[in-house]
Image 1: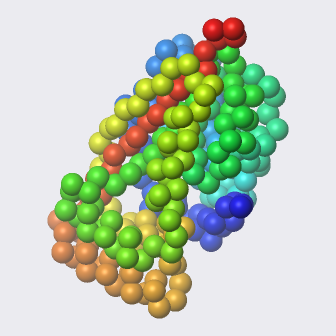
Image 2: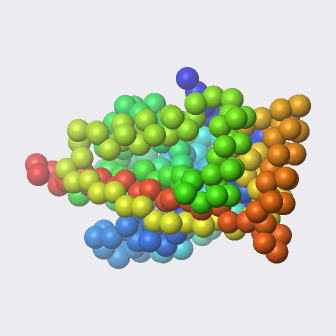
Length: 249
């Protein structure tokens, strides 16, 4: 099943409504790979470039692989980010051309086995692959209430797909070393930001009666929890990083 077009009409909301990733998560990706200026990163399912720019700002050269044209066109340019119209399963990149391959908030959209085989093909010996997700921390009352709305209005099982994808990535037999970290990541939002966050979510309704009802509930939720017009959605940034090992190792 292809999921390439799911975000075509949501790219603008993705830019304005999605959280970034904390510095500690980027630290974990680059740790031990040497001078970031010498690191070539392939960022699979790069979306609008949130993660690609963070890596480029550390000095890495980033190849942002994204099949959806609307998402690529919504991305802010960066001199160290090169955009590639391709899929995670078929990047068209050279064999052993990347030091680090990442998938931020995207691995569950891939054909897991095909994407993993492609990651191994493009990684250099001693290279690293990582899957990174922002997930709600529902110990926080506002975040829990938002999660309740998501579960009531969701149109498919994408959240379960994310968990399954993370498990499939971590279980891949090619990895020689694995590590997982979690970092708190607060996303500060006003009402417009919360509405954009929901509209950017491909498994929530964007149009029609269900979307109108969801937006009304979100407005009431923000009014209940906001301080000075803003709420904090508390996220856990999960990083699973795996090293492939050296040739023959």
